[in-house]
Image 1 (tube, rainbow, N blue to C red):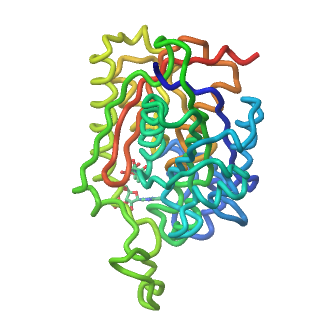
Image 2: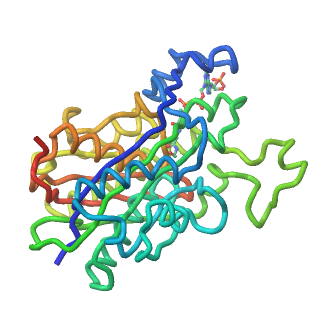
Image 3: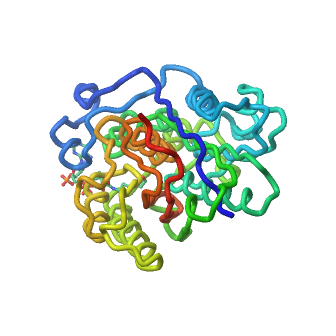
Length: 331
Ligand code: UT7
């Protein structure tokens, strides 16, 4: 018995910020951002935390499935921008949606958070210990962006999505296979310098702007190109899939050039690659569920489609997951 996705939805804040918005604030321009990343605009929340971004997505997913929040057994909330360090944002979300029968936890897998959460949730269903799992992936990156740093401010956005996982009726569909990796040597190239137990907040950490994203872009770029492409290719090989057998690559949206390199390694044409980085930027744990939700809503997913979900991010964390789509095409 495999775990299948029985509902999928996403949400982004209303406030849209295009590349030109940055031009009078930092030394950057629309042309650089478009050509180096593929980003045209992103959404920045005007208020609220990551759970406020996720609540509308969860409500849509529950309505789609025709169940209430009380029917959920477990909430896995994947994020690096929790509402608070504690309690978990899973607990805060549980209260907001009224899922009082569910336990849950936060999962800090950065850009690979949703894939880590999807696989963990699927295994929980497959073990028989829970019936319905809500897996959310989302981030409010604007909360940890230094708007004076042109090397990071333009890259990220706010948004998220969720899936409901349940036991499938046959082994033909669902979360079929996964390869998940981590290399803690990547910490130094992409991290938040202060705010945790190692460097608690002080006047100095705030003055030195150490509570924001720090990234050595080129170093991360090189590792991402190799990591995401290698693992996606390995997943195809292991499951004896040719490019023809793959309906969609649904990659993490950090940089269009990383996405193109992964697709090329898999031998996939561009029409099989989901890209929405132009509209949302990098929403960290949000990118993959937003992509999946948009594809489904657009009626582009057919029952039985092989989907390769792939990611690379801070940690380093990376991975690829093979999902055989279980819902009928949305009309
Ligand atoms: O999702 C988590 C994982 N993260 C990633 O996968 C991100 C991986 N990295 C990247 O996507 C890319 O490295 C970036 C988009 C961050 C940067 O692109 P790049 O092609 O690697 O540029 P670069 O860092 O080599 O910088 C090239 C030049 C530099 O100027 P000089 O030294 O050549 O004069 C930068 O200072 O571009 C400059 N630059 C900018 N110029 C205008 C950096 N940021 C900007 C900017 N606007 N926003």
